[in-house]
Image 1 (cartoon, helix red, strand yellow):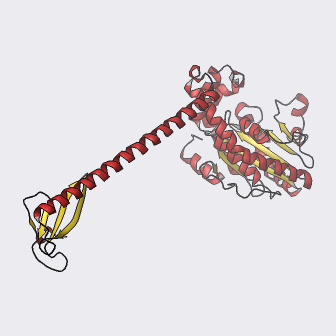
Image 2 (cartoon, rainbow, N blue to C red):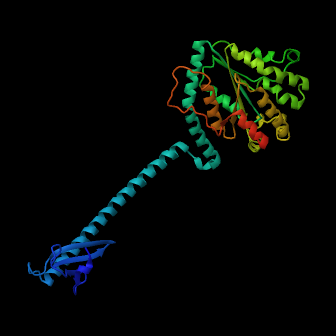
Image 3 (tube, rainbow, N blue to C red):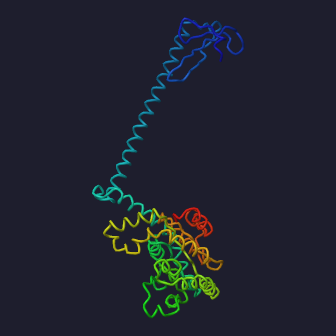
Length: 372
């Protein structure tokens, strides 16, 4: 409706059409804006209906009043609904607040960081449970099929090996798994074949053995601290691949996990061990030298990964700066090692490529920087 087709009257908002064309034909119209909206209404004909200007003004005013009244009523209704909604939201917040306080107790006395970490651990533990259920299925399958499994946990000090082992075995049947963490060899063991003291702990049918550090001590720790001769180190590096291939050919399921922690994160964890009375027992003389000997360990790590990964017994590199994600990826690697019965295919078994990375990628990264 174009206002050029209408004449303005003496009354604000009241117009009359100039032409008696079919659409308007001397119509009066009321046109005005209210509450950011524009309203237009045809009021009637000027002559045929004998609509006087006074009648038109009255009709216009009545139309305007009805709009204003309706808009105000609508606005009032909206405001009332908003108040009700706000009250309901406030009530919900109050109920949630009371519920959280009942759970957290006297939380104001706790360090906020400790509280945050504690709550996050709850979520992390819940996220692992679905995979821990799968580990029980895997364990049942190994027992039923009389299969043997060895899992090696390697990595620098404070890389998260122990924590990962605890999460992996938490709900397992302890009759069918063992954790082996060997100390220094005895005088008798020193005069035996190097691998002999490890072989005595190998699993029987239906059993899993988890080595918290393994025969790969001879690849990294022993040569750096002088616990073996260069010749003994080289013999190990030459023979171990064939040894592991023989194990796999004879039906052993062998999984090799290397937890790769950054130098910065290792230092942070060491500092925490030193200052936290609950963790001080973890700190040792070897730990004190780990940062100083970082480059030496990096050289041995690089050589170990390059020379001892194989198609039948590959290394799986798990970046472990984030402990929760490292544990989750370690579980996935173990679960993906065999096709056990009853697998829950709705779970995500795909590798997180930022955490679970290939040996080739780790070696490439180490050629660029020794931070890992």
